Length: 342
Image (tube, rainbow, N blue to C red; front, top):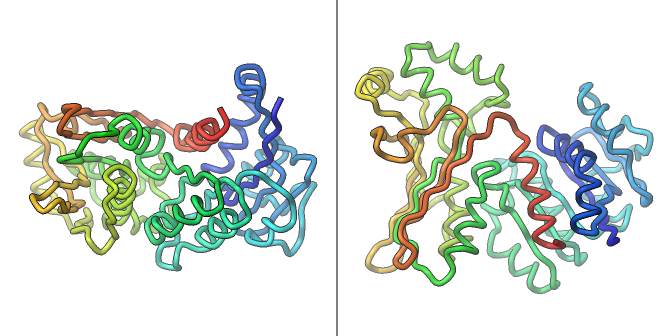
């Protein structure tokens, strides 16, 4: 039995559910993979807890579900922040699931990922921020220190969009990439097309847990653009940056256009696309588009996301996920751990 020590930074919706998942899957992981994952440290925005013998996962889940902090757990460490946690307890893997915080330089996630890689720790992260700002740098650090950086959960929730492209399309040239990697915008646009007022549509999205925070990151198209940047780097080895993406969100979208498309049997989605040009560069965009019913994306439900690769040798491959709750997104961290150790 191999014991893998984990540090988790960010214990929000994804991090909390990941802890619950480790509890649920513990027996399967031991019997099928001979692996025991032990959480030795955890940090959220209000504090940290650590114990080299392992934290009580049930205690963490209970405290977080009641609105508390990991700093309220039995193994709390007052005054310890996320970055200092990496020095406080030895670990094999950093799970970085803090908020994106792109406007604040993707901190504390970026500094924590850098520090972990330099310490010789593998890193698993669904956090888009560090990857968007420092994709090439972080991969160079991982190679330099002989560790792995895995991030399949950074795009389209639980859909293995990155793994599908980077692993299963090896040897191909991707001529066109299209993705609906953001669930929020499709959910809101479907309601608007049915005549639900903007404020009511947002309220329902909050109630359903689809929308969090002030919504700007999703509704103005930043999330879709950021995920496109990651896909372009990871799958096409194209050095895309956020500045290269022509971005249009759904704020201020003409409701009459949405209603007319709905009447025609079409469905609006924010489509992130990369189109290969003759000079081997890609044109990158993320914008709302009306999609006919005979297009695979034109049939997506309110809680579905998708990716579509058009290649030179493997044809066109489309993958779709229905994600009714955040469990598939949190499970991507387990998938990445098993990619490293399984």
